Image (cartoon, rainbow, N blue to C red):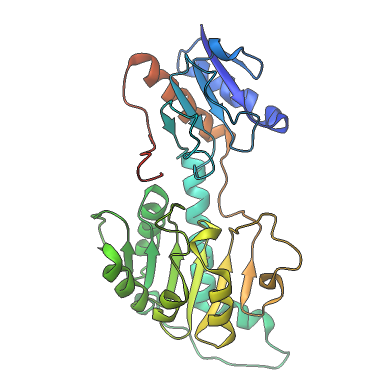
Length: 309
C-alpha cells in the first residue's frame, strides 16, 4: 500500500479525489489517498503550494513531492524541502495555455479591440497585415512556451524565442543570453512571456528592456507577474512606446481594485485564467510519477533546485 498525502486546501477535494482515484487504478497502483496520513507514513506528497504543508522535515519516508501547479517559486526555496520536487506539466494545462496565447496574439494582430470600440458609422477598411508579416517573440521555451511557439508557427507567424539554454524548435529562431534577449525583444511586434519566476528573471522586463521593444509593440504576459516591472510598464504605455499589455499574472492576486492596471486604457487584465491544472488530465501525471517512483525510474518534470524550475 502506497500512502499519498493530499496536501491541498479542502476545497480541492471534490475536484481531485475522483480523478486521482481513477488514475491510480488505471496505472495499477494501490494508493491510499488521504489528507490525514501521519507524516512518517507518507510515501508521496501531492502538493498545492497554497495547502497546509509548509514544513517538509517530518516526512522522512516521502520519496517525492508532486506539485499540482506548473509554478514552483513559492516552494522551491523552502529549506525543509529535501525530497525530490516535480512540477506539473499536463496536456490540459498545455492546451489551455496554447489557446490563451494564440487567442490574444490573434486579437492584437487583427486589431479586434479597435473594431469593438469603433463608433457607429466608423468604417476603416484597412486590412491587417498577414501573420507572416507580424513577428512574435516567445520568452521562455519550456514545455508551455514551446507548445505555444509551435502553434503560432502553424498559424503563419514568424516566431523568435529566448530561453536560458539553447533550444531547437522547427520554425523558431531561438537565442540565449542577455544580448540575445535584447535582439529578440527588438525584433517583435508582439512579445509573449512564459518564463519561470526565479531570481534571474525577477523584473526581467524592466524599463531598459521595455524601451528595447519596438514602438507600438504589444506585451502578453500569461507567465508570472514578477517578470515585469509594473511601474516601468505603466510608464512605457503612458508615453506611447508600447501599444498595449494583456496581463494574466500579477505580483498580488487577486489584483487589488486600486491597482493602475485596472484603469489603464492600454491594459487588459484577465484573472489568471490563461491556463489551469485540470484534474482529469493532471491526475494521470501524478499517477505516472508515483509509478515511476515505485519502479525507481526518473520522475517526470523534476525541478532543478539550482535553476529554480
